[in-house]
Amino acid sequence: MTDTPLLICGAAFTEDERARLSTAVSSVSVDAPRAIAGLAPGAAARLRAVAYKGHEPFGAAEMDGLQGLGLIANFGVGYDAIDVAAATQRGIRVTNTPDVLNDDVADLAVGLILAQARSLVRGDGWVRSGRWTKYGAMPLARKVSGARAGIVGLGRIGREIADRLAAFKMEIHYHSRQEKETPGWQYHADPVGLARAVDFLVVALVGGPETRNYVSAEAIAALGPTGVLINISRGTTVDEGALIAALEEHRIAGAGLDVYLDEPAIDPRFQGLENVVLQPHVGSATTETRRAMAELQLANIRAFLDGQPLPTPVN
Ligand code: NAP
Image (tube, rainbow, N blue to C red; front, side):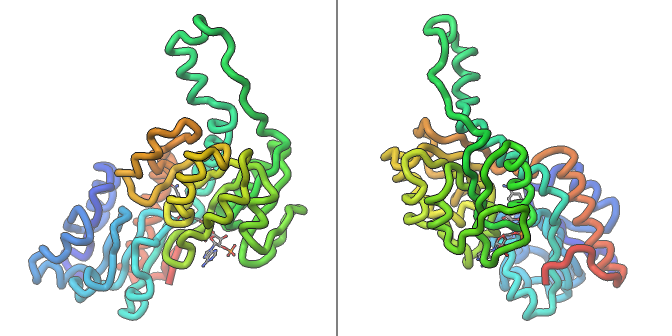
């Protein structure tokens, strides 16, 4: 093992997360992948692993700036910021932190459905602002239990969402590239057909170029004026321009969003819409889950440096 084998890369690491990594493994830090080019050549050449947290691209140029690099350990299950094909070509392993965050992201998806349909944010404002005493009861909201839910992408998180919504007595529909073993949930080979069949469409796909605009303008239109779109995946998976237009023109009933094309400087038109509930990309953002993710990231780094099998490899 070299003296300082680890590069902690990303301004998004909390002090605790950073301390956990640097206590375990001798390390240097940069705020973002683009800062790798500024490392002293001698120090850069000794680095063998990167602990990454962030959404800025980590591509071939950054990898080539670290000649001794053998591992990029991502903090998060979604590794769309990392050019995995370029890493594989260079013999660099990539790891992520799957499963430990499924519950949190699924909980948030359910929360967004309830917040959107039951006007929870509006209700809070109704009480705080005194409109309750001034105007009386708030306008009626919409029933969630028993409605039809459609999951786009029945992966680890998508399945947890479906299980939760089934407990709400919802009729479960889903789209994946292939039909899966389910407790009788209805499969749709095409996301547009799925959108047409449901009241709430929940997007749980991976991000990246292959799923860009997977939920297309046509799928958004197919949801119709009573349909609600929930996105906890990545901003890229939904045609954001088409979504904003449909919301502005009330061609769909509303949306609940945790992810956007540009984060944190989201399209300002979202902030002017009353039919959306917005969250600042907090799907996995609980103390418990972030600790579990940090532990899994570190377990991958330790395994790599010790020459052991990687717990959660991507490539
Ligand atoms: P997963 O188990 O790999 O499931 C991903 C789903 O994406 C699967 O249903 C898969 O389809 C689908 N998919 C993958 N490649 C595709 C392609 N080329 N075309 C069409 N569908 C494709 O991943 P997961 O652990 O559930 O995580 C899903 C995503 O959630 C992550 O990648 C991340 O972007 C996002 N996420 C967001 C937050 C947040 O804070 N909001 C937190 C964690 C994760 P098949 O079923 O057909 O295989």
